[in-house]
Length: 209
Image (cartoon, rainbow, N blue to C red; front, side, top):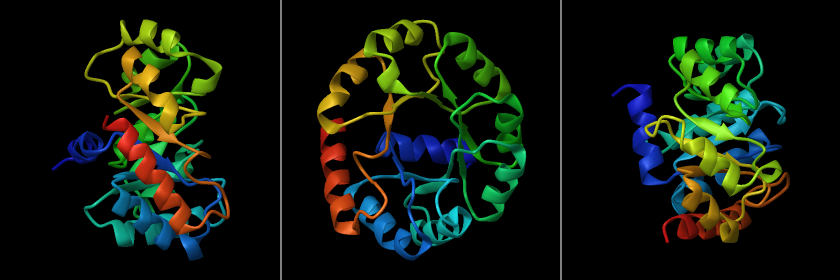
């Protein structure tokens, strides 16, 4: 199975990406287990978290084939190499830097860059992105995403990221979002594994309605 097929399988099982910004290596395994037990199948550790590469290695160790693990806030090609070396399989970026996208693809990682305009989205697709995140979603609207969904390739997974809550997902899904990246409404620095697991269960239930 290719990494793209692996991503598609996990995304089809649950179209949510858990964003663990600020997580520490000593707590990431318990939090990752809680997320996986709740049904989350894709987890990212932003690289501006404490010791992110160690957290990615530990997460990958407990995830096995149950979840896809990688990094967020991937800003340069050097970081792509470090993510791959740590055992990550996913590179999520806030921008559509074609060099970062190409490096991720070349390293055998899933590339999920952030975009806010049609020009950025098509540039990311040309560079080889596997999925796109509309970011920051709270600065846009479902109507904006719907307009872009009409011109973007239908087989390109499109996630809304930024300010997403369980109660707020329905309009985005109706507008054509395929899934979501979940930030502070799911996890914030210092949250316990129990709290994160409960929040994850609410998100999973909401996206499956």
